[in-house]
Amino acid sequence: MSELDLIIRNAEVATATDVFVGDIGIANGKVAQLGTVTADARRIIDARGRLMTPGGVDGHCHLDQPSSDGSVMADDFATGTLSAAFGGTTTVLPFACQQKGNTLRAAIEDYHRRAHGKPVIDYGFHLIVSDPTPTVLGEELPALIREGYTHFKIYMTYDDLKVTDRQILDLLALARVEGAMPMIHAENDDCIAWLTDLLEEAGKTAPRFHAESRPTVIEREAAHRAISLAELIDVPVLIVHVSSHAAMSQIEQAQSRGIQIFAETCPQYLFLTADDLAAPGFEGAKCICSPPPRTRDDQEHIWRGLRTGVFQVFSSDHAPYSFEGTSGKRVAGASAKFRAVPNGVPGIETRMALLMSEGVMKGRIDIHKFVSLTATAPAKIYGLYPKKGSIVPGCDADLVIWNTERPFTLTNDRLHHNVDYTPYEGMQLSSWPDMVFSRGELIIENGECLGQRGRGQYLKSARRSAGRSAVA
Ligand code: URP
Ligand code: ZN
Ligand code: ZN
Image (tube, rainbow, N blue to C red; front, side, top):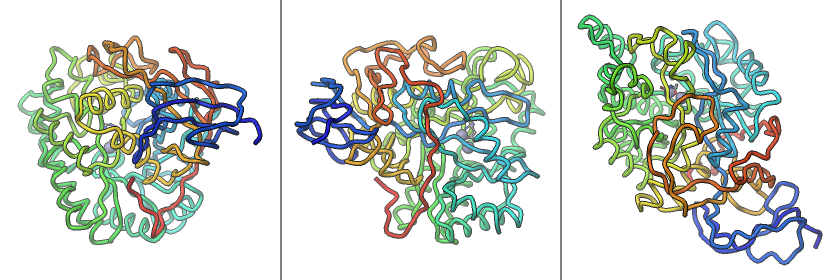
């Protein structure tokens, strides 16, 4: 038996299906042996009594993504992936966004340039298709899917991104033929525009009115429509960032009818409510995201959906806009109208620890569900499994060793993103990743990043195929 690079001994290893106490032998960045490892290794780490999970796969985050309002994201591929790594995430899937009038290829090339030499962890890209021209549908997108860009987002709202129902049908039909996974942002754009005008006419422009401009019925209707379009084409889709019981019910009903609808939710829909948008002054802008945070009752239903399997994916939807300065939340002025505030909240580093602390440690979900939601299912749905998302022989040795014994108060100054706030400031957490391994390399230890900037590798995704289940 040749020498291994690393053995982690006696860890309590949790996957989406199993828990066992044992050793993990690592060679050439991959899990080589599991169980009782008798071989020798250049390095041995004793993890007795410590919980180990697969490194996280953040299936939805935004890094260095330009936008039409002139705002600039605070995190690029260096700071964003550094922050992700500290939080136990070892794979990220940010978005390469097509500008209307431009090609998809131009978007991909631009994002590869943006990422070049920067990521600390492995990364792939979702496409955003905002302009499905005949060339995009007939040539570009099929070619890109075959090259490994197998998942793309469709927006039902935002002027510069939204497509029509007819265009959605074209894209879903293409996804069906090519084996791609469409993701849908489900909100009714006309309703939002109409309500926003009404609120503005009444002088209601403060951050808290963002929630009133996007009530749950708007999300429910769009989710229903997205599901109906997917049913018509008979193709699986994933509804991203589901915020409300109303939208979740549509998904639950579709799933109970046997339709393959996948769903994602995010920390902001478990830990924030519309009341956070009503914080004094302009503070509420920190929590403006779309769909908006809802009520405590919605939060309880979202927890139920995580527990019972309505949701397969728990992502950050990290959208890093700083609060101070003029490039983020205040790009349109120090107390701009809510419609001009960039949408999104930061959370790439806190995603895993929030769900471990509030979900697993408080008994709301079990450890298998945690692993599935944060790693295994997104890896499967986005064509990265079994390389990513689990701990099995032959997979990349992306691993997290947790500290579940040192409760602490979360403050922004302990985070590594480049954003000047966290919406979860002051929360008490019970768990945090102590050691993070990416392809067998110890990249995070004792609050230090040991991984070099630029070491992250680009990941191609596999296409969906009949017989390959997309669920964990
Ligand atoms: O408000 C949000 N979610 N901003 C990020 C962009 C998106 O739609 O995911
Ligand atoms: Zn979205
Ligand atoms: Zn997003």
